[in-house]
Image (cartoon, rainbow, N blue to C red; front, side):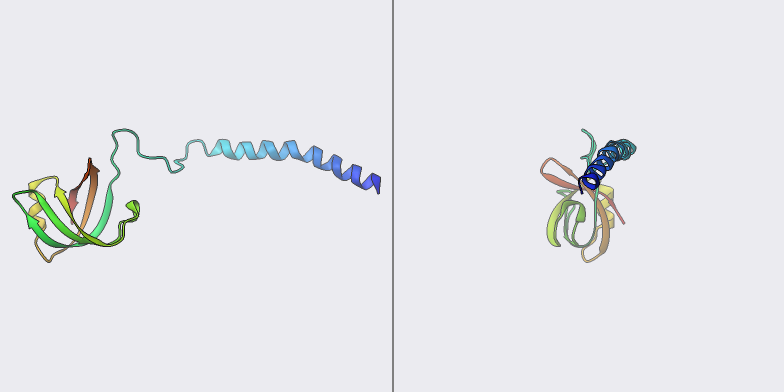
Length: 116
């Protein structure tokens, strides 16, 4: 019985360093991967959603959208106001129209960058 325990213990002691080296090799292979890092300083995360235009305020450069969930922000569906980056985008935002928008956060504001 002692011989079996000693042999088993010896086999484990020999195998452990090899397993540790293999695990380290797998970690080394992952060094270049993006593991959920936040965008680099100065980079803006772009968020996308589908929405229905509820109100357009061309003078203020704002639009109110009833949008679907925004997964990248963990937002549920809701109705809210957005700034519009370029006044030319306002032509694509008419009340009642279904749109797909891309937006970014700028300070406390969410700003629409593109409309489809």
